[in-house]
Length: 321
Image 1 (tube, rainbow, N blue to C red):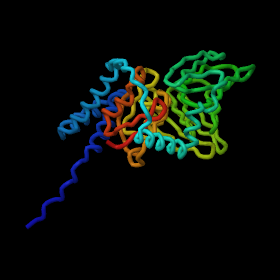
Image 2 (cartoon, rainbow, N blue to C red):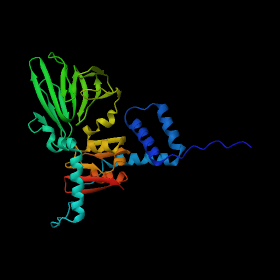
Image 3 (cartoon, one colour):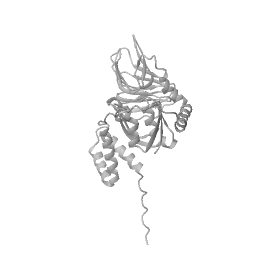
Image 4 (cartoon, helix red, strand yellow):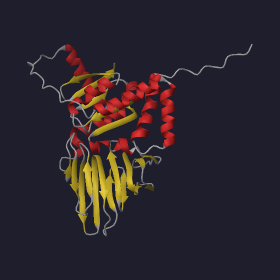
């Protein structure tokens, strides 16, 4: 009597969600081939859960453009500090202490108060530079400028900026960061800095990263994360996601929740702390509307299996649902 073939383990809902996210990013992030579209159709037909997960992403994408403004809150009388609220604030204070370097970066603005060019939290700004190049700042971003005869240089103090560089007789356009320098003679690229590293993504032509150890040339459509003593691998740049902020959205497909929260800090006031280590590593897909910052946490709570506890506008704690 022959043994029955082993059965494949059932797919977990998270696995289906991750796969749906990858298909959605492919279809909406460029020009998919006919073969890729056929493969998507086969995947959708293979299991009803596949189609449900994909349709949910489509609905979430559409919903971000249709969010209604919130109803103005009814003023409440001042409340006494309950024991639960006191304990919650204590937890929040402990979280601030544990993550002190990151918190100092965000609470103090990374020393950008007197920067030459800056944007506030949740603000997007465009600037024309003296050499004819332009820069678009994401929220909570700051630059210093240094343009003179034979020199065109900026310093990215914090945040994220999109540069459109024009060729010039003054030579290469330079962006200094705490971790290294980015050089470009002509082209367009996005550069972001956080408290531990910088990330470059090139959308047109080429750019180079120069650190203490090496120089790395990055081509169009590629990205590179680097620190002052380490240069990561060159990777395909998910430009549709990375640059979505320029058109008023934050787009995340199959990203750790901790990474999502880190980027969200540029777009809303106050600090957000994930109070469960495993929750921070959970990979999620999310689309948020930057024109509705007050609804971001509500949208996250609705779309993800999480709950939030807010202590004034300054601190929000995230827990598993």
